[in-house]
Image 1 (spheres, rainbow, N blue to C red):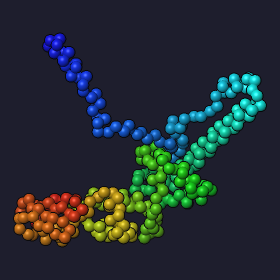
Image 2 (cartoon, rainbow, N blue to C red; image 1 turned 90 degrees about the vertical axis):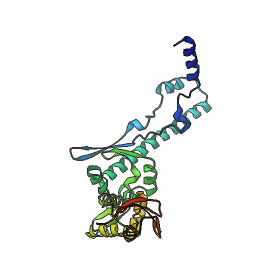
Image 3 (cartoon, one colour; image 1 turned 135 degrees about the vertical axis):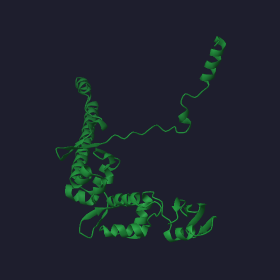
Image 4 (cartoon, rainbow, N blue to C red; image 1 turned 180 degrees about the horizontal axis):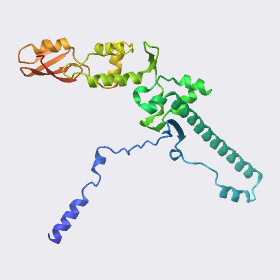
Length: 279
Protein backbone atom coordinates (compact mmCIF):
# COMPACT_ATOMS: atom_id res chain seq x y z
CA UNK A 1 0.00 0.00 0.00
CA UNK A 2 1.33 3.44 -0.91
CA UNK A 3 1.78 6.32 1.52
CA UNK A 4 -0.97 8.24 -0.22
CA UNK A 5 -3.40 5.34 0.24
CA UNK A 6 -2.52 5.15 3.94
CA UNK A 7 -3.12 8.89 4.38
CA UNK A 8 -6.41 8.57 2.53
CA UNK A 9 -7.50 5.74 4.84
CA UNK A 10 -6.52 7.74 7.93
CA UNK A 11 -8.54 10.72 6.74
CA UNK A 12 -11.54 8.46 6.15
CA UNK A 13 -11.23 6.86 9.61
CA UNK A 14 -11.13 10.30 11.24
CA UNK A 15 -14.59 11.05 9.81
CA UNK A 16 -16.11 7.96 11.44
CA UNK A 17 -17.91 7.88 14.80
CA UNK A 18 -15.83 5.93 17.34
CA UNK A 19 -18.94 5.33 19.46
CA UNK A 20 -21.79 4.54 17.04
CA UNK A 21 -23.96 3.09 19.80
CA UNK A 22 -24.48 6.55 21.27
CA UNK A 23 -26.63 7.36 18.23
CA UNK A 24 -29.24 4.95 19.62
CA UNK A 25 -28.88 5.48 23.37
CA UNK A 26 -27.07 8.40 24.94
CA UNK A 27 -28.19 7.62 28.50
CA UNK A 28 -25.32 6.46 30.72
CA UNK A 29 -25.82 2.99 32.26
CA UNK A 30 -27.40 2.92 35.69
CA UNK A 31 -25.69 0.51 38.07
CA UNK A 32 -27.46 -0.82 41.15
CA UNK A 33 -25.45 -1.12 44.35
CA UNK A 34 -27.21 -3.03 47.13
CA UNK A 35 -27.77 -1.19 50.41
CA UNK A 36 -28.06 -4.41 52.44
CA UNK A 37 -26.29 -7.74 52.32
CA UNK A 38 -28.11 -10.89 53.41
CA UNK A 39 -26.07 -14.08 53.60
CA UNK A 40 -26.74 -17.60 54.84
CA UNK A 41 -24.22 -18.64 57.50
CA UNK A 42 -24.63 -22.11 59.02
CA UNK A 43 -28.36 -22.13 58.34
CA UNK A 44 -28.91 -18.63 59.73
CA UNK A 45 -29.40 -15.36 57.88
CA UNK A 46 -26.83 -12.64 58.52
CA UNK A 47 -27.90 -9.09 57.65
CA UNK A 48 -25.51 -6.17 57.39
CA UNK A 49 -25.25 -2.76 55.77
CA UNK A 50 -23.27 -2.54 52.56
CA UNK A 51 -20.95 0.28 53.57
CA UNK A 52 -19.56 0.41 50.03
CA UNK A 53 -22.88 1.87 48.84
CA UNK A 54 -22.77 4.78 51.29
CA UNK A 55 -19.81 7.15 51.60
CA UNK A 56 -18.43 7.65 55.11
CA UNK A 57 -18.93 11.22 56.32
CA UNK A 58 -16.76 12.68 59.09
CA UNK A 59 -15.30 15.95 60.31
CA UNK A 60 -12.03 17.16 58.88
CA UNK A 61 -10.13 17.29 62.18
CA UNK A 62 -7.08 18.97 60.65
CA UNK A 63 -9.24 21.81 59.35
CA UNK A 64 -11.06 22.15 62.69
CA UNK A 65 -7.73 22.38 64.51
CA UNK A 66 -6.58 25.15 62.18
CA UNK A 67 -9.82 27.07 62.72
CA UNK A 68 -9.55 26.70 66.50
CA UNK A 69 -6.10 28.34 66.45
CA UNK A 70 -7.32 31.38 64.56
CA UNK A 71 -8.11 34.60 66.39
CA UNK A 72 -11.78 34.82 65.49
CA UNK A 73 -14.21 37.50 66.42
CA UNK A 74 -17.35 36.63 68.37
CA UNK A 75 -19.58 36.60 65.30
CA UNK A 76 -17.15 34.38 63.40
CA UNK A 77 -16.95 31.89 66.29
CA UNK A 78 -20.75 31.72 66.44
CA UNK A 79 -20.86 31.07 62.69
CA UNK A 80 -18.31 28.22 62.97
CA UNK A 81 -20.07 26.65 65.96
CA UNK A 82 -23.45 26.87 64.18
CA UNK A 83 -22.07 25.05 61.13
CA UNK A 84 -20.43 22.40 63.35
CA UNK A 85 -23.74 21.71 65.11
CA UNK A 86 -25.57 21.50 61.78
CA UNK A 87 -22.98 19.02 60.50
CA UNK A 88 -23.33 16.94 63.68
CA UNK A 89 -27.11 16.84 63.17
CA UNK A 90 -26.67 15.62 59.60
CA UNK A 91 -24.25 12.89 60.68
CA UNK A 92 -26.64 11.83 63.45
CA UNK A 93 -29.56 11.68 60.99
CA UNK A 94 -27.53 9.57 58.55
CA UNK A 95 -26.59 7.18 61.34
CA UNK A 96 -30.21 6.89 62.48
CA UNK A 97 -31.37 6.26 58.92
CA UNK A 98 -28.82 3.48 58.50
CA UNK A 99 -29.84 1.86 61.79
CA UNK A 100 -33.52 1.98 60.82
CA UNK A 101 -32.69 0.39 57.45
CA UNK A 102 -30.69 -2.33 59.22
CA UNK A 103 -33.54 -3.03 61.65
CA UNK A 104 -35.99 -3.27 58.75
CA UNK A 105 -33.62 -5.60 56.90
CA UNK A 106 -33.29 -7.92 59.90
CA UNK A 107 -37.06 -7.95 60.45
CA UNK A 108 -37.68 -8.72 56.76
CA UNK A 109 -35.10 -11.53 56.84
CA UNK A 110 -36.89 -13.01 59.86
CA UNK A 111 -40.36 -12.72 58.27
CA UNK A 112 -39.26 -13.91 54.81
CA UNK A 113 -36.75 -16.54 55.91
CA UNK A 114 -38.11 -19.24 53.60
CA UNK A 115 -37.89 -16.89 50.63
CA UNK A 116 -34.20 -16.21 51.18
CA UNK A 117 -33.36 -19.86 51.84
CA UNK A 118 -35.65 -21.67 49.39
CA UNK A 119 -36.75 -19.32 46.59
CA UNK A 120 -39.27 -16.81 45.34
CA UNK A 121 -42.35 -19.01 45.55
CA UNK A 122 -41.95 -19.14 49.34
CA UNK A 123 -42.40 -15.40 49.86
CA UNK A 124 -45.04 -14.66 52.51
CA UNK A 125 -47.62 -11.88 52.73
CA UNK A 126 -46.13 -8.89 54.54
CA UNK A 127 -47.55 -5.41 54.99
CA UNK A 128 -45.50 -2.34 55.85
CA UNK A 129 -47.96 -1.52 58.63
CA UNK A 130 -47.37 -4.89 60.31
CA UNK A 131 -43.59 -4.45 60.17
CA UNK A 132 -43.86 -0.86 61.41
CA UNK A 133 -45.93 -2.02 64.41
CA UNK A 134 -43.37 -4.73 65.16
CA UNK A 135 -40.49 -2.23 65.12
CA UNK A 136 -42.42 0.52 66.92
CA UNK A 137 -42.01 3.08 64.14
CA UNK A 138 -44.40 4.88 61.80
CA UNK A 139 -45.42 3.15 58.56
CA UNK A 140 -44.32 6.24 56.61
CA UNK A 141 -40.83 5.78 58.06
CA UNK A 142 -40.74 2.22 56.72
CA UNK A 143 -41.99 3.39 53.32
CA UNK A 144 -39.31 6.08 53.04
CA UNK A 145 -36.56 3.78 54.32
CA UNK A 146 -37.19 1.03 51.72
CA UNK A 147 -37.82 3.36 48.77
CA UNK A 148 -35.10 2.84 46.15
CA UNK A 149 -33.20 0.40 48.39
CA UNK A 150 -31.88 -2.99 47.23
CA UNK A 151 -30.68 -6.19 48.90
CA UNK A 152 -27.85 -8.45 47.83
CA UNK A 153 -29.21 -11.82 48.92
CA UNK A 154 -29.21 -15.50 47.87
CA UNK A 155 -31.96 -14.66 45.33
CA UNK A 156 -29.85 -11.95 43.65
CA UNK A 157 -30.12 -8.16 43.76
CA UNK A 158 -33.70 -7.58 44.88
CA UNK A 159 -35.63 -4.35 45.61
CA UNK A 160 -36.40 -4.23 49.32
CA UNK A 161 -39.93 -3.04 48.53
CA UNK A 162 -40.66 -6.39 46.80
CA UNK A 163 -40.64 -8.05 50.22
CA UNK A 164 -43.90 -6.27 51.04
CA UNK A 165 -46.76 -8.00 49.32
CA UNK A 166 -50.43 -8.70 49.95
CA UNK A 167 -51.74 -12.24 50.08
CA UNK A 168 -54.52 -14.73 50.57
CA UNK A 169 -55.49 -17.40 53.05
CA UNK A 170 -55.41 -20.96 51.68
CA UNK A 171 -58.18 -23.42 52.46
CA UNK A 172 -55.84 -25.07 55.00
CA UNK A 173 -55.41 -21.74 56.82
CA UNK A 174 -51.87 -21.03 55.59
CA UNK A 175 -50.98 -17.60 54.25
CA UNK A 176 -49.78 -17.28 50.65
CA UNK A 177 -48.59 -14.07 48.99
CA UNK A 178 -49.73 -12.84 45.60
CA UNK A 179 -46.11 -13.12 44.41
CA UNK A 180 -46.11 -16.80 45.33
CA UNK A 181 -49.38 -17.25 43.41
CA UNK A 182 -47.80 -15.58 40.37
CA UNK A 183 -44.88 -18.00 40.56
CA UNK A 184 -47.36 -20.90 40.71
CA UNK A 185 -49.24 -19.46 37.73
CA UNK A 186 -45.99 -19.26 35.72
CA UNK A 187 -45.24 -22.90 36.57
CA UNK A 188 -48.74 -24.02 35.50
CA UNK A 189 -48.41 -22.24 32.15
CA UNK A 190 -44.88 -23.61 31.62
CA UNK A 191 -46.11 -27.18 32.15
CA UNK A 192 -49.29 -26.93 30.06
CA UNK A 193 -49.83 -28.69 26.72
CA UNK A 194 -48.89 -25.96 24.24
CA UNK A 195 -51.26 -27.36 21.62
CA UNK A 196 -54.12 -26.92 24.12
CA UNK A 197 -53.28 -23.84 26.20
CA UNK A 198 -55.19 -23.40 29.44
CA UNK A 199 -57.83 -20.74 29.77
CA UNK A 200 -57.90 -18.41 32.77
CA UNK A 201 -60.83 -20.38 34.18
CA UNK A 202 -58.89 -23.65 33.86
CA UNK A 203 -55.93 -22.07 35.70
CA UNK A 204 -58.34 -20.82 38.37
CA UNK A 205 -59.67 -24.36 38.84
CA UNK A 206 -56.14 -25.78 39.16
CA UNK A 207 -55.26 -23.20 41.81
CA UNK A 208 -58.50 -23.94 43.64
CA UNK A 209 -57.63 -27.65 43.82
CA UNK A 210 -54.31 -26.62 45.35
CA UNK A 211 -56.12 -24.66 48.05
CA UNK A 212 -55.79 -21.18 46.53
CA UNK A 213 -59.25 -19.73 45.99
CA UNK A 214 -59.00 -16.63 43.80
CA UNK A 215 -61.30 -15.39 41.08
CA UNK A 216 -60.78 -15.83 37.36
CA UNK A 217 -60.52 -12.04 37.10
CA UNK A 218 -57.57 -12.11 39.51
CA UNK A 219 -55.88 -14.81 37.42
CA UNK A 220 -56.35 -12.63 34.34
CA UNK A 221 -54.84 -9.66 36.18
CA UNK A 222 -51.79 -11.67 37.31
CA UNK A 223 -51.33 -13.17 33.83
CA UNK A 224 -51.33 -9.72 32.25
CA UNK A 225 -48.84 -8.43 34.85
CA UNK A 226 -46.56 -11.37 33.97
CA UNK A 227 -47.08 -10.62 30.24
CA UNK A 228 -48.34 -14.15 29.58
CA UNK A 229 -50.56 -14.13 26.45
CA UNK A 230 -54.16 -15.18 26.75
CA UNK A 231 -55.16 -18.55 25.34
CA UNK A 232 -57.95 -18.56 22.72
CA UNK A 233 -61.05 -20.49 23.64
CA UNK A 234 -60.47 -24.21 22.95
CA UNK A 235 -63.94 -24.67 21.41
CA UNK A 236 -63.23 -21.93 18.88
CA UNK A 237 -59.96 -23.65 17.97
CA UNK A 238 -61.67 -26.99 17.44
CA UNK A 239 -64.34 -25.40 15.25
CA UNK A 240 -61.68 -23.59 13.22
CA UNK A 241 -59.70 -26.79 12.71
CA UNK A 242 -62.69 -28.56 11.22
CA UNK A 243 -63.37 -25.92 8.56
CA UNK A 244 -61.92 -25.71 5.00
CA UNK A 245 -58.43 -24.53 4.12
CA UNK A 246 -58.77 -20.76 4.20
CA UNK A 247 -58.56 -17.87 6.61
CA UNK A 248 -61.49 -17.59 8.97
CA UNK A 249 -62.35 -14.81 11.42
CA UNK A 250 -64.13 -15.52 14.69
CA UNK A 251 -65.25 -13.41 17.62
CA UNK A 252 -62.04 -14.12 19.52
CA UNK A 253 -59.51 -14.15 16.69
CA UNK A 254 -58.49 -15.32 13.23
CA UNK A 255 -57.35 -18.75 12.02
CA UNK A 256 -55.03 -19.30 9.03
CA UNK A 257 -54.53 -22.91 7.89
CA UNK A 258 -51.01 -24.07 7.09
CA UNK A 259 -51.88 -27.68 6.30
CA UNK A 260 -54.62 -30.25 6.81
CA UNK A 261 -53.71 -30.72 10.47
CA UNK A 262 -51.99 -27.49 11.40
CA UNK A 263 -53.01 -23.85 11.62
CA UNK A 264 -51.94 -20.62 13.25
CA UNK A 265 -54.32 -18.74 15.46
CA UNK A 266 -54.01 -15.02 16.19
CA UNK A 267 -56.28 -13.92 19.03
CA UNK A 268 -57.68 -10.43 19.37
CA UNK A 269 -54.96 -9.50 21.88
CA UNK A 270 -52.38 -10.14 19.08
CA UNK A 271 -50.94 -13.32 20.65
CA UNK A 272 -50.25 -16.05 18.09
CA UNK A 273 -50.52 -19.80 18.59
CA UNK A 274 -49.71 -22.80 16.43
CA UNK A 275 -52.52 -25.32 16.78
CA UNK A 276 -52.57 -29.02 15.84
CA UNK A 277 -55.80 -30.78 14.98
CA UNK A 278 -56.81 -33.48 17.42
CA UNK A 279 -56.32 -37.01 16.06
